[in-house]
Length: 271
Image (cartoon, rainbow, N blue to C red; front, side, top):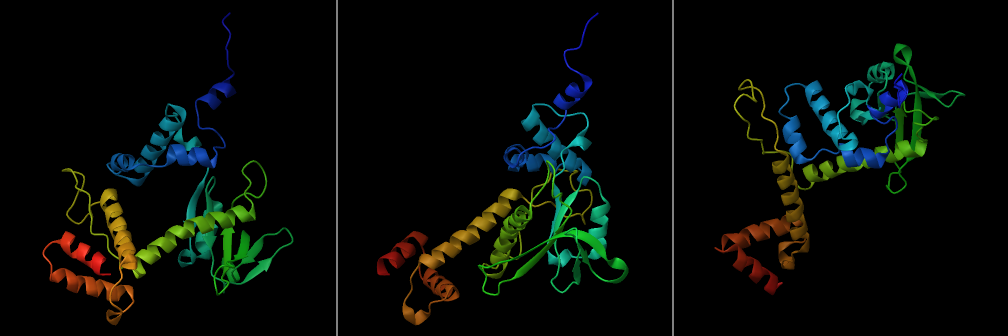
């Protein structure tokens, strides 16, 4: 009688996602490239795009696509700042299985600590018991206090410490601070680029065409390069010291010259 080399459980394990991928594995195999996004954005619905992204990551990670994508390992799927802080949203997130979240709540929300280490937040019928991490940003002048609620496990193989939750939040907040810098200081408040769509990709004239990742990257790098140039360029003191003063001076200087190469060389030689 022929025997089986592997048990059923072993075959299922080899034909599915690893239960606990490392952070390096997630970054290496599931970071989407520009060509990946181009392929994914051709799908019509959000769940189709999500499934396509999972398939691409699985193909790079495992060498094949598992039959059941629902067994993909759980990761943080929701990450919100104070503007999205609603107790009703926290309740809904807690009721969902295999979905983790980190959400910063406002400091004026009433909190009460239990003996088990959890906190009761809110008042009245909207009260909800959650895990909370509280820390201060000592590098900031105002020593801001951060209150983060999460349903990430404390113990076990997937346990996440309070320090790690704080580090997750700070890492994602750097992205937010970058966009804040781009919008407030470099005035990048509008993305003018759009992707060229094939016939049939946009179903109606009212449907907005998707953004082109290459175009967005070009806009961001252009603003950053312009900011660096303005910081390095020196202009006569009587025209001012601020970045905006430098920009006005350069605009006036450029209007007198035909060739950008000539005016830039002259500007460097003079100053």
